[in-house]
Image (cartoon, rainbow, N blue to C red; front, top):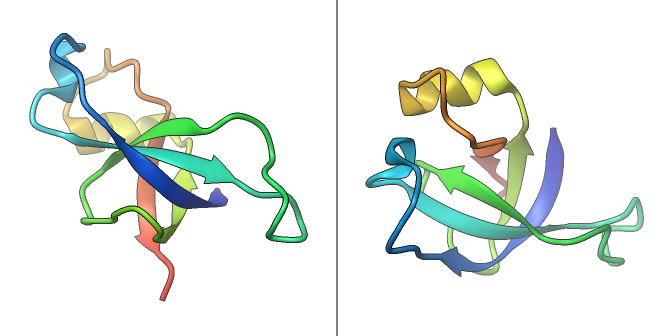
Length: 85
């Protein structure tokens, strides 16, 4: 699991069939200090309603994401597990 901040949303006219109808977020991870960006932003599937500026907990658990999307062939790696209060 990773903690990051939603910096935007992603839209696409052409995408993998398992992503149809799902909201995609652009999330920036941060280093241990919580301020320094750590790497490039990632795309994550969201079913909890997070938006720009929200701090979210992401998981890269493949089985959990496959179950969420209902497909074993999805190319998705990251999904939102929770929104920080």
